[in-house]
Image (cartoon, helix red, strand yellow):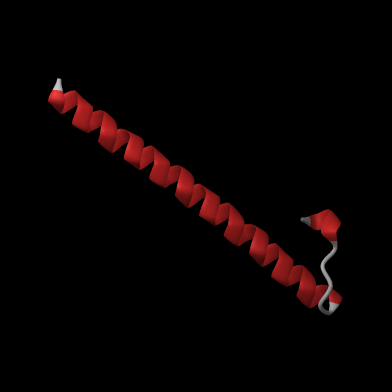
Length: 50
């Protein structure tokens, strides 16, 4: 029973880390799009693209 608990804990941790990593990746992509748009428009961001 204790062995299963440790495995479940580890699996949950991996899933949470994967979700966190995915969220960070999505944020980075969004920030990159904003920076690119700012460069194209000379400093303003078109909110429709966000």
